[in-house]
Image (cartoon, rainbow, N blue to C red):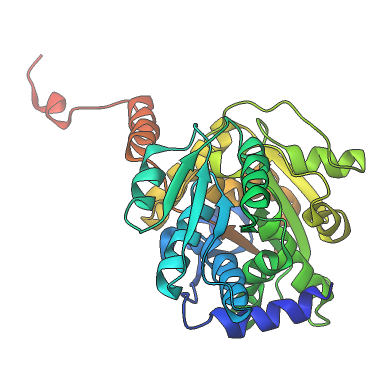
Length: 337
């Protein structure tokens, strides 16, 4: 599969339906790390996630093949919302399967669209396998969240944009779950003569590092995962997924971060860039900060992949940080002893 050509075709298919997101320079992060740091803001993409790129590319492809209904997908929320949005805009019909553990705010967002919603399983991989089974039984068309060249190519259009927004980039940090996003970005950059020397770093939570552990093992493995604030990147990987091969070939290294490091990154995005990013969305920032010394004097791009952070989670993080500060009442100095 020629990732470079597929990404270029995807760009033409989807450009009228998506936002060309900003590549924003971060003075704060650049100063504290002695690097030139840019944020690729997919948290302000249509549906607040990069997922809409792959969804439109796949669904437009299917529509061009004469398929207008009977479409099934599975998702932890972001891919599902992207598919729901694209189905609505393209006048197509389908069903979205969600794990029982999906965040309430993501379910509420899905209900805004005329799409069928079903629930199954406690893990994204369980849900995906069940949805694939249902698609086969119903002779429907299954749209994978990541294991599909059209999905991968759609996500890879981020790299096309980055290439035109900033030259001479040394490294790109990308959140990783099933691997669709990093497969598209890394595949495009590494196969492009102008950017082939750009280093690509995959970023995962310590509580669910399935792709990095699989690449390390040389095959897709079952790995016990724990709950994580990075829920959009959590869970297992479908056996035989093409993203494993892409990650093995194109990703230079993986960086694993703790829950506290992810929360710290959320707080930085909120306080220094006045934006909201979800747990998976800041894996890139958390990973970069963890190993920042290695990237001094480098030009760095951090992909901020999504912005659906529940308000109670944000409140908990911010309030905890405020409580850690020592409050001094300015009136105390005016009071007589």
